[in-house]
Length: 123
Image (cartoon, rainbow, N blue to C red; front, side):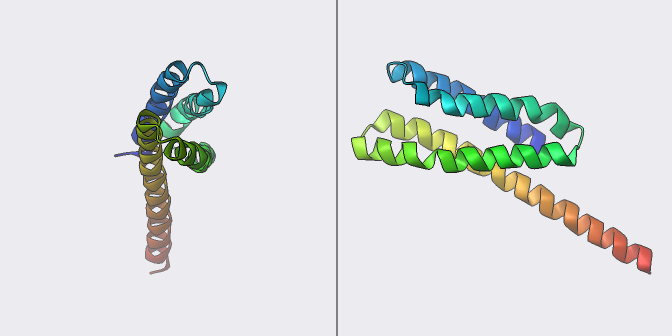
């Protein structure tokens, strides 16, 4: 799984589930926040595919922001005992967490590769 593929999947889940939540919650405007982040993350995807490091960090940052931002809606849904809302927010949280984990792993792999290349140049 490449960061670009997982990020695009996450963006599509945020958009789709967010729009479903918007419609099913009597058009609560706050349900559009994940949709907005999904659109931003999807817009950054071509740069991710090209391997642009700055865009990768921006996409990872947006992913982290939406992960943190989804915590309160989950808490609210649990408080209301709204099973459908809990399921929607949980799906978005899990896909976002997966995308963030793939970003972190790819950043670590790139750093290890740079260190290995530097070490082989010294020898």
